[in-house]
Image (tube, rainbow, N blue to C red; front, side):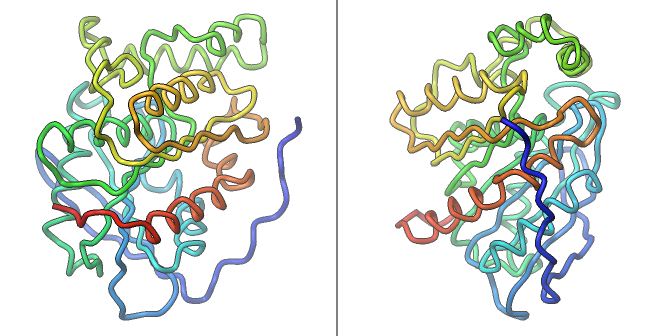
Length: 288
């Protein structure tokens, strides 16, 4: 199946992007707020997003175009992108502690974000999707903030690199670099081998997946991360978590930033908009 490479629609003149400072576990972090639609109104839904980069690289610029379109497609909600401590600075659990701290900061700073506090969603791509999945676990375990949903796009969930789609890359030379990059990413993020089985590092291996928020999980054809995404979705469903799992068309994923581009040009944006609209129609408890 070939990749969908149709041009993206033109962005609305109502799109607004604002840089701001958020609060992580150990101090301030860069943030960026995306809104579209009618100005001056408070949105009922805030989606907090974490960028890709294999835990060792990446910043707010990486997914900027994707988030502009995401905000434009969901004008009744706001999107907050937040940086986190990279493993080159401090390994696990620094990044996940930052991610959860940003959710707590967002809950306390609703006015600054133009958010009513009604629905809080967590999202990410690749390593950022790992952080989003872990935030759902941490928020459940720590009593908040309550989440209305989680959006995991081509997530890294298995430090053991044990799935078939990851192992079969050995027979696909053009994708071998992707598998090698995943291995290098985990070596940097989880230098202590014992951490590789911790549920906050390896959500796929967690035995406690009940009472989590509804999930949208998007994998991609020919992606070595495909199986772990789909296996995690199956485990969530088995634990009674309302979960939608969809596989996007194949796309070239062996270049830097490729997953952000894939998410833009395949159908991720439409799936995300539908998922958020579904949350808004459902009766979900307000963020605690």
